[in-house]
Image (cartoon, rainbow, N blue to C red; front, side, top):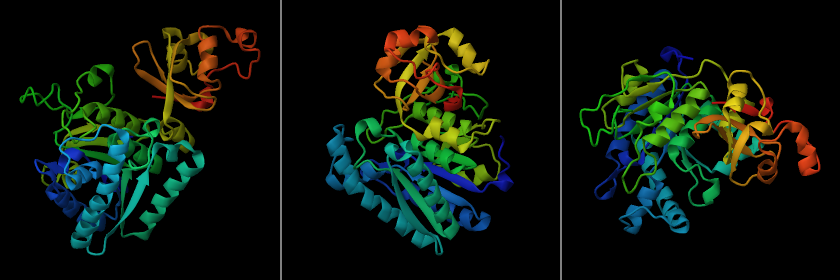
Length: 375
């Protein structure tokens, strides 16, 4: 779906850590310019705007005098707890100053909040209610101070994409310190050509991505491509652009060529399918052979044990898993009918053998087509 910019109603803007830090720690100058841009856009176009913000750990580092991003989870959580209050103070002050009545609302999320279907829907309802109030800009961040390692989003690019998918946003703008996706790392090759439009995220395209080397940042281009894949599959057009560019958001909404645009999927996903694909944290990986890959992608079949070649992670019946090909390229997400231990025992075997191996056969399929979303 190619979003009609004149009909755009809901916009998610992700502001990266690299835009909120300078040599001395947290630096709010770029954030101030972005807020000054968002305020008139909301009023003029009656937009629903969600800001997904990095910066809590960076703010905490500044407050605590830390020069490197904490690596141990307890220290990172403590740093985020210190920084979160400072970060929201900046946002509230800026929107009060430039918003002419606009206010902020803080929404802290952990991946486990989206695992449960009921809380997943409740978060969506909360954001829709904030939109209905008319003068509120929700500021979303990962709840770093309480999230355990295995239940984290891992980066705010992924969080932004999953929020955009969850609320049915029309567009996701990921603002960073790069112009977009280039054919080579622009830090090493300054003349690297910017890729303006992407219709499909291929393995070759993913090979162009490079990780960030900055101490205060988590997500590089790899995570941004992963976020674009999630958002586009949920029919959310995604743009990666340089947040330091003046009027960057207005230029995008005016249809100018800015950054890299990833066009959304033509096929709409139901909200349940979006929850399966993007709401739940993946607990493991099922690697499948070429025959199973063809059955899923071309024939519309369920995933059977016979096509599974490898199992990674520990998970239980009903958990979400990634389904990949032999090269570990993502093919689908799905809810499993068997635990990782059971699948390890029945992988590569025919469905008729399951009862003999396990002593029971609850399902013929390891992942039923109705509980699977192709990526």
